[in-house]
Length: 141
Image (tube, rainbow, N blue to C red):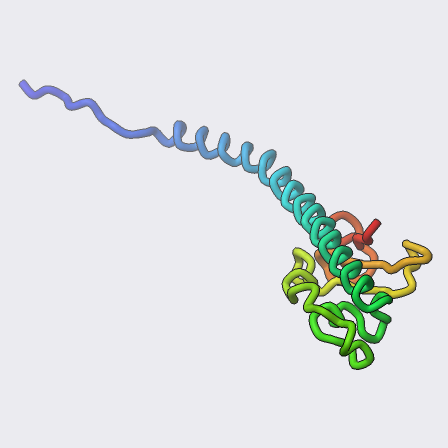
């Protein structure tokens, strides 16, 4: 007599149930992870802005003023023509002047948000003014 060998493996129904469960988990988990990455980049942008603010303060202490709009943040990396004797930089690296979305921070010498001071602005993920969520503009405080 022959003995029947036990079959090993999964049935179609078992595979289908596991696939549905994995799909449901992905639907609920993946969007939450995406939101966390967006918030993390906003926090990184704010932290890098603080570093740019420190570099601007060092520039002001050495040169007696902040960079003007035409000099912008480039004045932190190379000396403006009229400050050869006072400028003691570089005050920042080029990578420190880029936001987490690889766009250069916008510098406004006469701030509109920070009246009486300067504004440092990240244009968010889309690199354009305005927007919501991860595309929203971020301004120094």
